Length: 267
Ligand code: UDP
Ligand code: MN
Image (cartoon, rainbow, N blue to C red; front, side, top):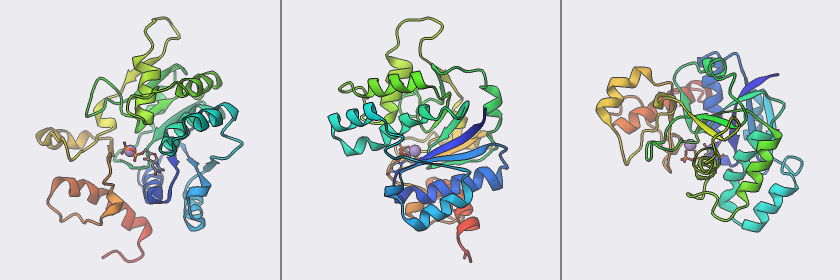
């Protein structure tokens, strides 16, 4: 069965992120795997959709067909639009045409080829999730990079779980997925949910609030993937590599790729 890198796109502002992510995986890092994208066509302009179609191999529209009855009920019951992303991430487990997925947020920038993850974790099962620790609370995982096994039963359980009031402690997908795969399961048997910890270098989240700068310098060459968490995304402000501040320097890596593939005449 096929495997793929997959991302999520629900609104226009993240289009640039999704495009740069795909160009980087395909044309910079030469992945052998397919690139898939779960997207909400109602949130994206026709022009952006055209660009997405040029670089992604598999476009999976989030439509009525995909959002089944029970998920619709949960969304209606909670009536909170901002939970959109939370619930669409659950749809990853519904993609049973794939045997394994490496999910990446569209605000991530891989610096190294990640194909070895499929090989390393090919034997993980549907009740297991592979992810790096979160910088703000390293005892839980960050949901910007996930290695997962699509599975009908787990998808169903996730939909039911998401319908429980306050199922997510942060109101977002990260809280929900940590409760489901990591914090709630107390029993210990062969099928109990389990977080398998990936090193931090697979999901490095430079943040305004906290940066361990000497470590960033010491381990920079080992970073597999950068993840621009928080409200300030690289595409919000143009920067170039001559900028000295460390945050902008990392954003400049993203702009390098954007300029290469999407600006005719970069200055
Ligand atoms: N996303 C999107 N449109 C939005 C919000 C989120 O397409 O308006 C997708 C996108 O793939 C994004 C992911 O959901 O990377 C998770 O959101 P975000 O990266 O903003 O969360 P953070 O990593 O900052 O916690
Ligand atoms: Mn993110």
